[in-house]
Image 1 (spheres, rainbow, N blue to C red):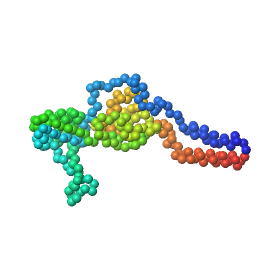
Image 2: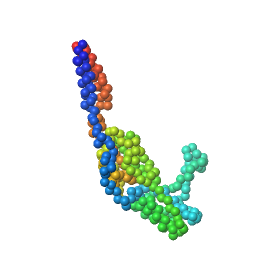
Image 3: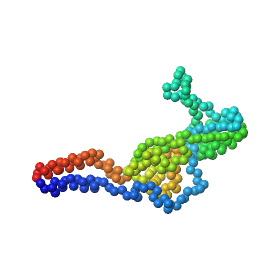
Image 4: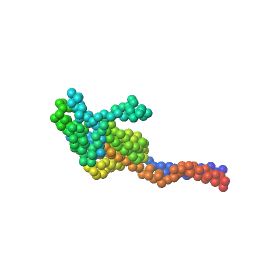
Length: 266
């Protein structure tokens, strides 16, 4: 038996498999390359805190040394029944929850005693200061606590756990959002991550290069409520989509058949 002939088919199959695979360089994978040399262009006066938009949901609590005086400026706390704890329409061992203010299409909320208050474009601190000034006409030394409760971002594409995530923190960077989604897969295109945003009633977007250290200076580096992040598949993944998922099995079967044919026709 000629062993050289016998091994020709498996060797050819191995070479074919090697050709299908492609090498990936460090430049295509590593984030923030050359960060130590990057020129920081962050404005020290820049405020990355979230701006309130229409359709946002806010909780606002008002307190004061004399709490009875502050009570009219708070929405009633509602009882939320827990699963299986409702009996005859009454809440049994339920939990209490603050009601929310919905920002309307004109950027306003309806606030107790004060009436219509415009809040669009303000951050939490700005709105707290504005309400404190107005409430001070009725209550001495009021304390106003504002919280945005509908801060969500969606991360889609070539990440380990795509989905929509509720964010508790006021500041959310793009890398942190990708961390919630389990980071990019090896097939994610790191130099072309899309961030989509609604601003002033318009849809805007930007492509960010995570391998470039200057990405930290982009206005899209810190995400806002309802932003959508999409990680595009790289060329290797797109090419693999054109191949049959069972290609590996077919190659193995072909290798066996070719080997048998060589033996039978010998």
